[in-house]
Amino acid sequence: MRVHVDPELCQGTGLCVAVAPEEFELAEHGPARPLNPDVDEDRRRAVEEAVQVCPVGALRLSPRR
Image 1 (cartoon, one colour):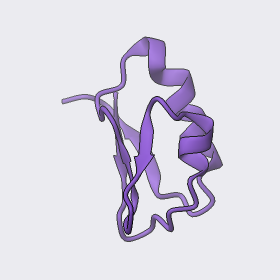
Image 2 (image 1 turned 180 degrees about the vertical axis):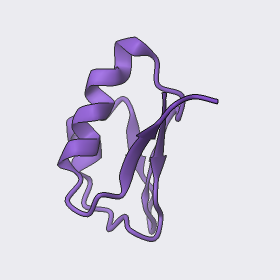
Image 3 (image 1 turned 30 degrees about the horizontal axis):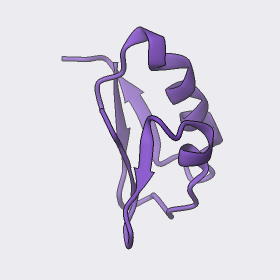
Image 4 (image 1 turned 120 degrees about the horizontal axis):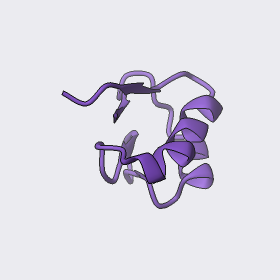
C-alpha cells in the first residue's frame, strides 16, 4: 500500500504525527508528509490509525502500483 497526503486539505494539526511519529512529519510551514509513502505490512496498522484520526481527511491509502 501507499499513503498519500493531500496538501490542499492538510491543515497541519499533527495528529498523524502524534499517532504515528515514525511514519509522518510536519513541514515547518506546510502539510504533513509521509516519511516513506510505501507502507509495509508491519507498519500498516499505525498508518491506518493516522488516516482515521485526520480531522480533515487529508490522508488516504491506495494499492501499491
